Length: 130
Image (cartoon, rainbow, N blue to C red; front, side, top):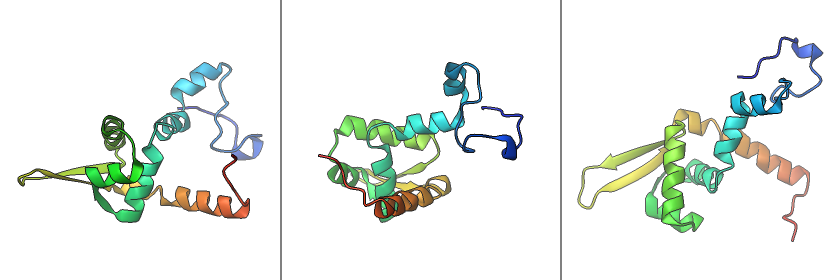
């Protein structure tokens, strides 16, 4: 984790901004913020979280239909998010086997980020450039 011996008042950067190493490579390799950005920057990670915030529980095919990605990529992302403790995969002992995905408490805590995105988009009149 990136360390900063300066007090909050002495900082010139935002709290979450991590440029505290002389070598940026060390910062990127150690920084928690960077590891989060790496996960969320992966294809479909944020849309999956958003879908689960809206729908609470979803089956794989429902996620696939909404996101329209390849099954391989969606599966990989679901595994990444599960490994990070953001989503829960629940397998039901039925024939055929039923699997549902939902957010953990940690995943649900991301709702504030999506609210901030929405407010930012409204406040800045965001429109996707063509």
